[in-house]
Length: 286
Ligand SMILES: Nc1ncnc2c1ncn2[C@@H]1O[C@H](COP(=O)(O)OP(=O)(O)OP(=O)(O)O)[C@@H](O)[C@H]1O
Ligand SMILES: [Mg+2]
Image (cartoon, rainbow, N blue to C red; front, side, top):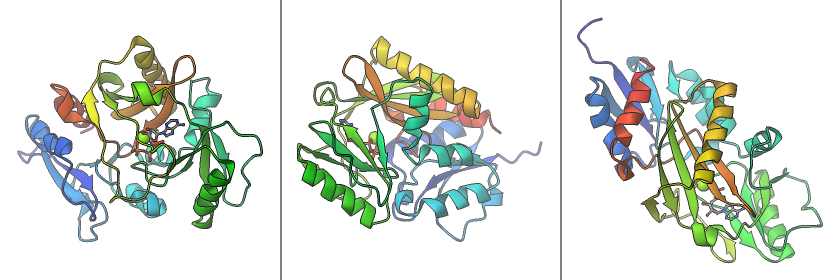
C-alpha cells in the first residue's frame, strides 16, 4: 500500500453544510486510525466521489423531500455506509411492518397510502406522520378524528403516504431511548424528551426540531429490544457498521418507534469513546 492515507467522505447536505457538533468528532477519531475524514455535501455536483475510499452518510438531513435523488446518489458512489439497500429500507417507516411480521415489538402502525381514507375506528389519541420524514417535521398528535383526517389529507395532498399510530403516553414520563450500535455491538444510549406538542402538528423549523438530549443507561428491557432488532437486521443485511434503535414505553414493555440506519444523530459526544467505536466500524470496511 502507498503511504497516502485513505480518505473517507463524511456526507452532509448543501442546506446544512457544517457538521453537527457530535459529528465533528468523527474526523479526529478517523485521524487516530490513520484515515482522513472530509465533510462533503451529498448534493454538491462538483464532488469527485471516486476520490474517496468510503462515503459515510451523516448529516444528509434534507433527503425527506427528495428521497429518490438521495437514493440514486447513494447507489452511484463507489462505496457507501450504510449500504444503499439499507438506506432504502430504513428511510421509509413502512419497515415497521417488517419488524412486526418478524415478531419484534413495535409501535402498532397502520400505513395509509395517498388516496386511502382514515379507518373509522381509531384509538382515542393518534399520531399521524409521514412515512418518509425526519426531525419530527409534519408529525402530529390528535384527539379529534376530524383533525387527524385533516392532517392525513394534508400529507396525501402533498403526495405523501402516512402512518397512523396510537399515541403511546409513556413517552411523556420516560421519553424516548435511542440505542446506538456500532458493528452490531451496543455502544451507548441517550434519552430524548417527548417531541410532539399536546395537540396538533409539528411545523418545519429548519430541517429538524430542537431536541432535549442526555446520556442514559437503558433498562435491561430497552437494551434487549435493541439487541433483538440489531440481530434481526444482521440476519437480513449483514452486520451493520452503525444502527440506532429508538424505543418508547409500550403498554407493558418497550416498543420500537424507529430503526435509524441512514442519517441518525449518533450522539457521539455523550459517551466516552463513542466516536472511536464508530470510526473503528468504518475503518473495518477499508
Ligand atoms: N406513536 C407515538 N406515541 C408517542 N409519541 C410519538 C409517537 N410517534 C412519534 N412520537 C413522538 O414524535 C417524535 C417524532 O416521531 P418519529 O421519531 O417517528 O419521527 P421522525 O420525524 O423520524 O423523527 P426524528 O428524525 O427526529 O427521529 C418522537 O421522537 C416522539 O417523541
Ligand atoms: Mg425519531
